[in-house]
Image (tube, rainbow, N blue to C red):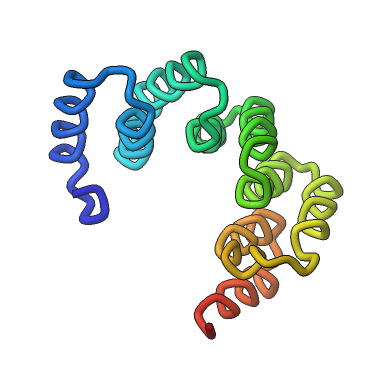
Length: 154
């Protein structure tokens, strides 16, 4: 339902699932993501904050919190959330951290993160979309498209 843009129906099912298992990180992570997509940023903030309060090791919740903070215009909190996510998951969320730094005006920090991420590694091609996002945040369209094209050529 989420991938079809049927957010109201997806939310209804997720609220039912959460009623059955209110402490489930997977259910609450997906609920937070759908709330973000549906434009329910305040609800997403509550859902995702509750997840990381229960278990601060939930990297996806930290990542989604970063996006919520960006959407709400709080770049400082977004960077802080992405720092937590990156500390837990590594390269994927480091790319999101690079994006957050870029849109917050911390161009040097964003470029430093991207240089580290672009070093050869087994996971590099799997993370191409995330690198594209970070480069887009820096306004480097050519580099963003390079990463998107590298992923589609495989």
